[in-house]
Amino acid sequence: MPPETNFSSLLDYDSVEAYLQQLFFLSKSQLKKSELSKKFLQKAVHRKDQLQIPLDLANNLEINPKYLGKKIEIIFKDDQVAIFNKPYNLHSHPLNYTGQDNCLSFFRKGGRNLGVNLNINKLNYGRGLLYRLDYGTSGVMFYINDEGLLHNLRENFSKLVKKKSYLAIVSGEVRGDGAIESYFKYIGSKDSKAELLSKNNYLGGDFPLGKLEYVVRNYNSSEKVSLLEVSLITGLRHQIRAQLASIGHPILGDTLYGGKEAARIFLHAYKYEVEIGEKKYVGKSLDAELFSRFFDLDCGL
Image 1 (cartoon, rainbow, N blue to C red):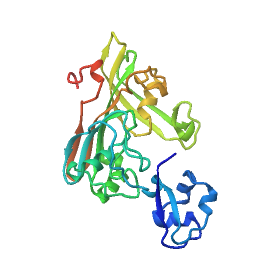
Image 2 (cartoon, rainbow, N blue to C red):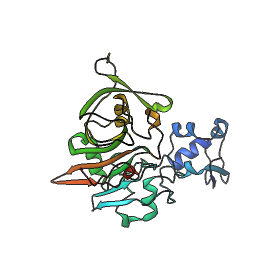
Image 3 (tube, one colour):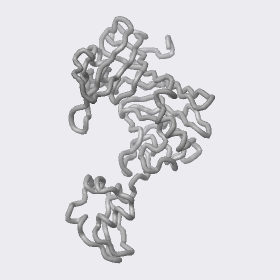
């Protein structure tokens, strides 16, 4: 059962639903998805009534100061931007208050000296993150400390984010560099998996087009895996994972898309370049945990 906390009402309310909406700024949709029953939500609330409320609702949109995860490397920070290296198997941001395995809880626990202002964009759990990485993906992330700048960068993402490069270890020998273009359709529970439609088989519909390019950096003949540097032209959910699988070279560890089981999903955000005014911020990290089992990243990149 989710953790709860006790509240005493200071006023009368027509229902628990009205009480929670007014006190915690919760939407009807959030309450509907919660563990609270319809009968409980419709119950009248009287002054001095004691209510047990799930902690996730009582602390809606707050970041938990408890952190469960590895230490996060800060690559660079100034007043506008913090650039850091996300470990694999860690969420970019929480989905609720009780979530502790995420980057923002690390920054909440560490305090403002880490260079991250969690007091912006407070109606969104993503706060100042410019983009997110999948749970299993490691690598460079940008946190923007000014709300106006954050919205401008997000609105002009394709124009101002100049480079999005990833390293991927894939099954088999990839023979030659290449590019992939395909339309994306999301399927499964909560659209959890991407299904690709080739440009030749596209019959119309509201499906986004994903584009990427890749360069072969190395091949490990004993393990039969290739190291690719992937440049994202667009940026769709699961784009690299699904498109590399579509050419017969799934990412090692990415079982959702047919990859062999491994200690992690071997996908790492290696380099991002972001233009802010007259300044170009470059975030780069070759600290991709466990990649060294297969390749020396200090050679040839």
